[in-house]
Image (tube, rainbow, N blue to C red):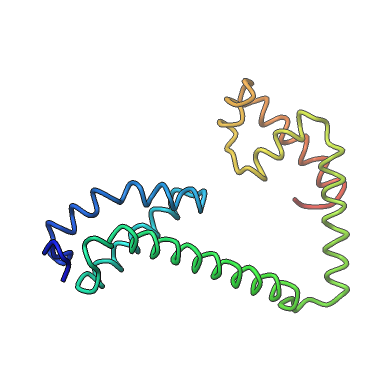
Length: 170
């Protein structure tokens, strides 16, 4: 038990600790993660861990304990991210079941697609990319470009005519 007889396991004391240190720990974690959601997640885990070990932590050492746990959880998260990235990188290369011929045809198609999109007149290309890549509706495109819906429809139609002529159905 701590020297000043405050028991961290009592909900009132735990609440005081949370109100005293949560903002500070969140800021510390945000500085490390550069991601407010990640900082919030780790912060919650830190206080869950404190609650789970409340009987073992002395009140005078709670701040140090919180920073140590926060830093360790951040480091564990980074380590986990590296493992996931390495796994994904490794499996992307070896997971393909397509034949070399299929991969070559797909690559050629993508190159033709990119070339055809690049060759579209600017206004048509802009509408095509906003609709097909950014998934914007015609109304949103019209508002964004400050043109009528009919103009968007016409540009999209013209772009699709060119695309179909050059590479087939899009």
